Image 1 (tube, rainbow, N blue to C red):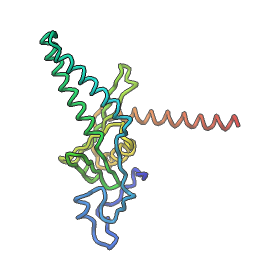
Image 2: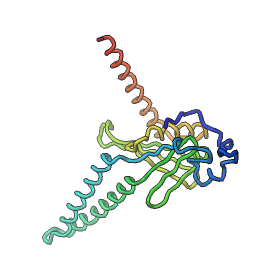
Image 3: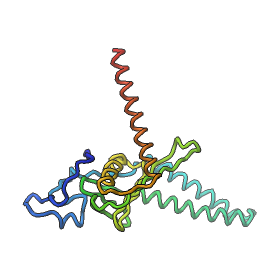
Image 4: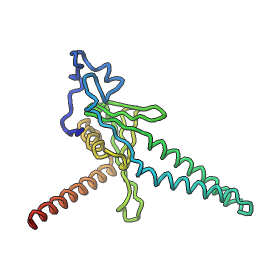
Length: 217
């Protein structure tokens, strides 16, 4: 399903196929108000290949810390440090597993997060916070990931750029942030510009390859 920015439906005009107003259903599931088909809802999830390295790192780190913590001749300060690091790796493993089983559902009407701890959802017109952060894994900043945080009242949803469908989520939430006149901070503005520049470069490179191939023919 392709979600088209700047073409938001009127939430008050949503009706069921029998002509009844869909507000009641929309209150419980803003992603799929009455009259909206399953085909209008897109499910986003984290791929296994993106989670596998994080799970492997947390398991290996945990095993190393456990070994260091139980070696009899090891200095006490090292053992206590290893034990503390082991707790961090456990937290990291649990966080990765939680993220792996999360599912995010989006439509032109709203967004819903589903996880083992329950879920949260809100309609796009309720969006009140939009923030985009970038975390670099290298000093030059050329490699890393984006983290998108969107919120409406007490409902908050956080998604990372490894999420399949992250671009669609970013586009629609960014568009609604503009429609809702949400003020974004300088960091978010800078990261959005970075994404726009990257997309422009990708399109330019694709166009160059296409025209180059045509000339060779």
